[in-house]
Amino acid sequence: MTGGVLNTINVRLDANTIAYILDHSEAKVLVVDRQLHIEVNKALDKISKKITIIDINDKHADQSKLEKIGDLEYEDFLNTGDENYDWKMPDDEWQAISLSYTSGTTGNPKGVVYHHRGAYLMSTGSTVAWNMPNRLNFLTIVPMFHCNGWCYPWTVPMLNGRTICLRNIDVKKIFELIDKYNVTHFGGAPIILNMITGAPEADRKNSKTKFTY
View: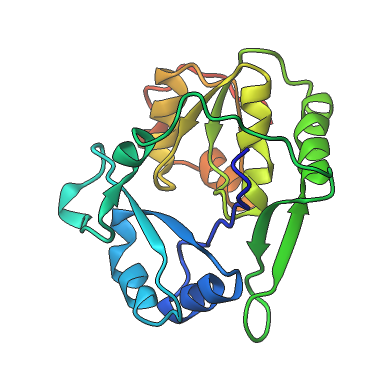
């Protein structure tokens, strides 16, 4: 809606690879969690052009692990917006909506472009394939850098749903959030499903939720 292209970067990458992606994608703005300050600050020292840095300062995170990266915080940045901004639809459905980079390949990561049409079809198609209802409670486990979180960040709002965010992969926390927020749906890679089904009794002892896989 603002004319930008979303580029979600794998938070597990090293500084050299992050710097490469920022340069190769011609990034202009980086929105980053302060917990990632060590590798991100190293990466910023390596890029060819200065970019705008917007910090996410999560009050629920362990503050001892956070360190300032940029000069602007996300909440302050939102306050600079214009509520009367006349947002525009893309001129063509084939225009880029996001740019993702591969991992586990030889050489540098390769950029893969998502167009608006593809993201739309993936978002709507999931509702049919999974028989997703309106006003669901969705626990997001798939990271945004993994194929845009399988496009569920767009699917859930379309269904008037609620997204519950998981900061780190923690099986005990997953069970707690499922019960606390009455989670109805979530998605995860097979390794995550194995972690949940094989969780020790101590991690799930208070769970009242029945799981269907």
